[in-house]
Length: 296
Image (cartoon, rainbow, N blue to C red; front, side, top):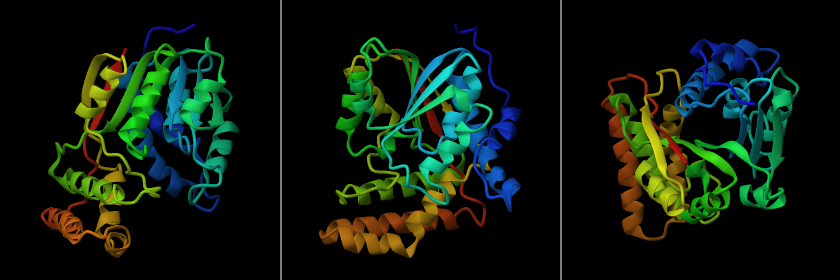
């Protein structure tokens, strides 16, 4: 039975970070990376207003960065079904299988069930009467191969959960230092659109407006939305920007794109990222704004 919503304290991030796998030689260093990740996801969960005792279906759980926060939020009487199609052997420095197994062996492990499956196949294989209070898509939509994948999934989820919760990058930068992240994400998405075999973390860049339109076309109605400005310690923007600035990005352009006009556009997009970083005058790149929404 669910209880009235009570927000998680941001300070809980330090505890949640300890749930994740870390090398024995330097656990504090690795957990220091996990703390801002947990802080960010606590903000998302608090915007979503998930009560304790809730039954949650998480799509695209990966190594469980958000899963751990969801498990903390629902409490000992709640449950999280975490679904991801990625191979258990995928990932570094730890695979999905290793990271998930470590969480299962920890304090919130009993609240989590991992499912290695395509989301729609998972739903089809469950009893039609199997339902959840909430279904969560947190920072996973850009991994999809095409908009049609999202539409098909949203249609399949109708009637299986009372509330749809989404968080994805907003393509806006409240902080100037996040502008390079916006530009880098668009450059990466345009490149991957020319690589049918792409396994990059940005394959289908959809804006909040497009996601909302697809959700509403699938029978979901926007209940509320907000913008979260990630903290300075969240490194996602720096990672993506570094990827586009790298020499390997130029090599990928040559490998995957034949059209010289498109090649020039992509090289120019990379130059725009580089110049945006220079304009920060040695300040660190920030992570762009995040859009958080509830649909019913």
